[in-house]
Length: 138
Image: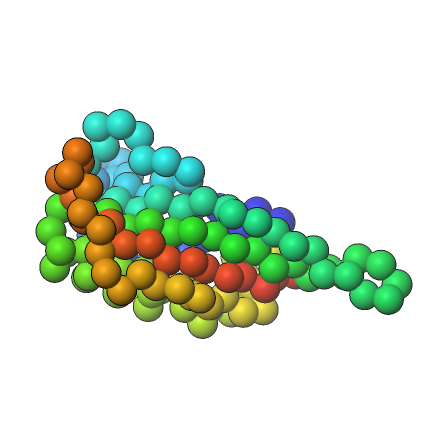
């Protein structure tokens, strides 16, 4: 099950999120990155990383279910812009159910959405961090 690819597709497929993080040009690309944002990449941007996956076990052994935790960081050049991007990401994924590629999402919810943005002096950008929990089946 490739939840990371599904998460990317859900974020890119949300019109509000895509409108904020899209690069103009042909073809259109999106500043949504796994693990790290490439050096020199413009903001706003989103970074996501799979933190853990715990497979469910039943009395007869492994089940088809797993619980995965992702960390999602939103970056923006202004605090107001960061709040807009963070709200758009929350709206796009919190409470999601259904197919994400080959995986079936039973429930996706945000366990923690950082309420106070952090300011990065080196990058001159604001960042919010959230934890996404996904219960999925193969």
